[in-house]
Length: 385
Image (tube, rainbow, N blue to C red; front, top):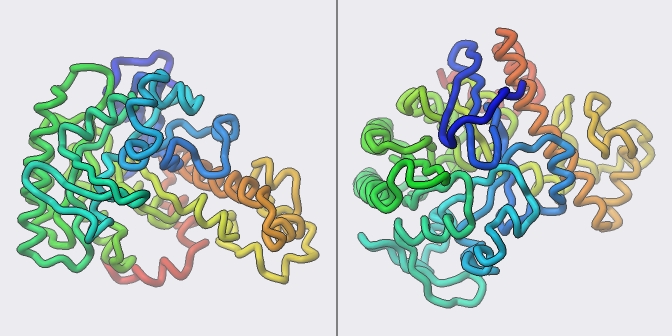
């Protein structure tokens, strides 16, 4: 359901609601994003095994790039000289870039955090680098991403309360510096703040209060899906989402499975990304309307049925399970493309179906149908409420 006219970048309109689940339109310089939305991950400027025309064919509206990886190679200034990331990778629709904070903080002994920023060594060649809240925005503006994320610290699961409290205060100060370095309305690049606080409800609330007091174009929940149980993840999603302003887009970073996504939508979240559909595709795990299957299993060796009879993607229209299994077991590169094409279609169909269900006032039934396809995850959260 396209909007008849594109409005000023940053405009976010709620178009339908069913309980806390909602449909919306986020206007960016490169087009409208219809929420709830799943964003395929193109870490180094490419969604693995998938070309831009594939993404357009399956209805992707926005993709991700990563500041850390693109800064290291080929370099943000090189990309800027070629007209920005949209021109460089031939993708004309919106792009969101992560600040690179998660990647830097995952380096552990290769980085050092200070008030000014974070010193780190490249995972590629060990060279020394320094990210500040201001410098990561410079990188992202060179990339010309439609949505830029602020630099934050993503604390490890199990971090102490004292460390988590000090960390969220640092994240707030960095967020304030980010907004000061790039005032609202300066240009068309939107800036999102990130709520941290680990797995302490009061610290989550404290972080949300501080971050949402800053005039960001949207707000994200960070620091989830970092090793916690499914029940903890679900609990903190439902607890934290109402802490974010209802009139701005709400983004759950790096999460998750189809089960996680429909529960995030039920909580009132709008935007999701995860490497799961493409990573699992390369490992032979495929998502279908009947649940997950592992295409490498011997039972599919002579199965002439399509992967998913309810899917209209090129893979399902054209090839049998037997052929997909053959490609995977033979190590053929085509396996990566066909499996990834299907998994991404499934995730994009998932959010399209959610939008339709919300508009029809039947989202709870839709959510229950998706959950039933993933009984293992459902069993892990039963009783959490």
